[in-house]
Length: 165
Image 1: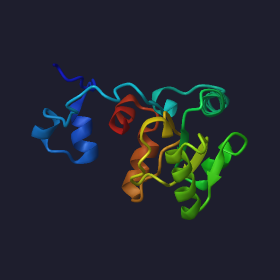
Image 2: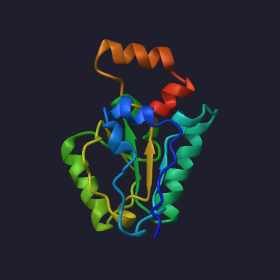
Image 3: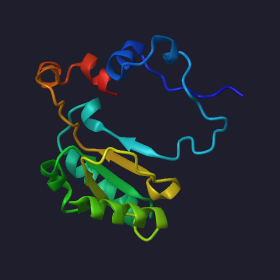
Image 4: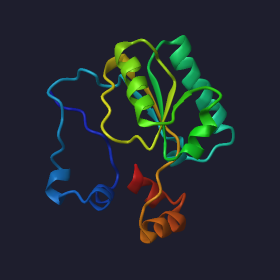
């Protein structure tokens, strides 16, 4: 059986962004089965196109997925300031103890969120229905002056967006 691969127009972006080995890009790690394929939706609209009302649309989707569809919903934000944009539709984990509590609630099926996790990009295990919708609301800023300069210089440019994607 042929294994599905993501289509990436420019592999050099992966090599540059993640410091990947040139030869490994042509040999991606793939699953031996199709289990789980297309079961999650990840939205990062800021990387695709600017859109008026995008925040309201995403808030409506997040609320609908958690409340109506009973599917785990998580919003990742780069800062507490960005997390405040979601306070009217999601519960914000404002410390590491709350992150652990909300992740456990999602894993156990006691809640479907939506939950906002700020600066929580580390490994969090949310299998199956515990997280069917992941919204990445904003990108973290680079820590070095060069990374910040590059982000400001190339903001919105297609080459920079594909390097992030």
